[in-house]
Length: 293
Length: 240
Image (cartoon, rainbow over all chains, first blue to last red):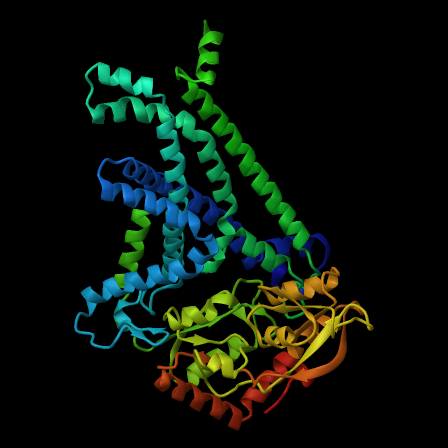
């Protein structure tokens, strides 16, 4: 990107390093950190919503809804992630295309599944073949978000279900004694109190989610681990910047990144725990009450 | 997520329906000199130049993408791209699930590379890339199979002593051996496996196969394919 970098093989020392670290591929590497953070920022709330829905469904008095909630959590948690990321994504992609085909070319009469091959009309491809590379990346990213949200939502379902069961029965009974309806008890007493029980489990899931992003490459979304492996590998003269196996340095960089993420998460989660424990009928809440008086 | 999805759907829907003549090529991007992602972040190598040339000759508009080696065949069948151009050897096993064009790189011997001359490659641990002809060959031999998702990791396994030898295409290993300064060497005899490298296609895409085969034949006939091989593989590259 700089004029001095025009002929990388003739420069050396710090200039070489400067040019190396600002090559197009390195800029892509730096951008992939943004991709990962964006993925976390979108996936975490999405899995919370799915998990909350799942937990409410699993506690429902309506049997089919209860089966749906429990079945979702049991099935997804029982299947290895890698299977989801290999097959579920392809199935999801094909599902979108089948639905799109119903709208954009309803008259298409060729069979969709021809042996091992999958065929929809060209206009029904998502994205269509003429779309920009960005559209393909955004689509891959969206598939990743949906898949991550479904997988982690199942774990959140279980955590929240357990947290809801952990709220002392006496608390709910008091609400009922005040004449609150079932719905009011749920909204005013159960939900505000369950978070303190859910937090340790949710914090665990958050940490696992941070480290699960290398699975993104199975979806052609290039994340930080893909780039670290790709940039760090032995580079022959075929490349502009040949170098020996430098993966250790790249992975040390990732280590620092992950440790920082962990540290920041711990601080935030610690504050959240303190805040949620306030006034709760738990040992932590009791300790805070005593310290204040 | 909703906004992103909506945006993607909009892009996908409004990107026009004149999609018929765009051919999507997919490569691995980690197998120099066949294909690799260069320092500007672009796909480069022998197959990049070859792919652009046959697209020009066949009057096709081509776009490039990368896909992990392990899922490269399922994604072709699912229609996420139309052509695999990733140094893929033509084998009977693969022919059962996908179709191949004529070969654009002659059958190339596979070799063992080790860190010392007396390495026990016949019954020791041999590193290979997963789902390759070399992996199938080692699995059937007396050696212990050690599989990696990328080619680079197979060579790294030999350098750090995890494996006794790596078994891969000569053309991939040759530059690595030459530039290793004596740390790596070819051991044992070359093994002839595979039927040359071809473009991977869906079995139903016979029209596209015809066009590409025509372009490959033309490049073989006027010698431009050999010029390209010479450029990327040097004098040791196999010629037609």
